[in-house]
Length: 84
Length: 84
Image (cartoon, rainbow over all chains, first blue to last red; front, side):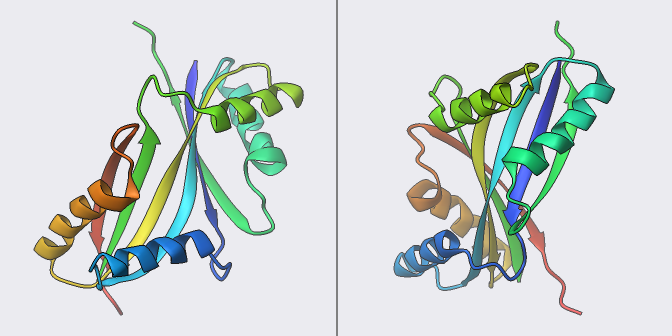
């Protein structure tokens, strides 16, 4: 079993209205020092299979479904889960 | 200037319908080995101020706005950005 963390974030230059809304709210709460907020996703997947299979599959999943590669970048970490 | 990464995830035991939907879609695409998907957020903030101020402010921001502590956990990393 492998635990895979996929981090998906908007590419530089792509507007992040959700981040802008959070920044705005933080300013209203008095946190004037906040100059930028960008919001991304972390997806944590538990996957069965061999390491090779998981590695090729995860890249595929990102390209096909987990990220929109036109406007988003992704990176991932694969870690084996040793059951006790 | 500091770059702060805030990771917000649903607490264990809290249902994650968005994660379940992604898992379902992955199964439909043929990735049968995926046993669980949980989805969280990463917020990347650029903040001006001293390290002490940023540290106390970030904890406050998480408690007040960035996380819903009833159903979500958060953790953060603070890194100084040295301008060149």
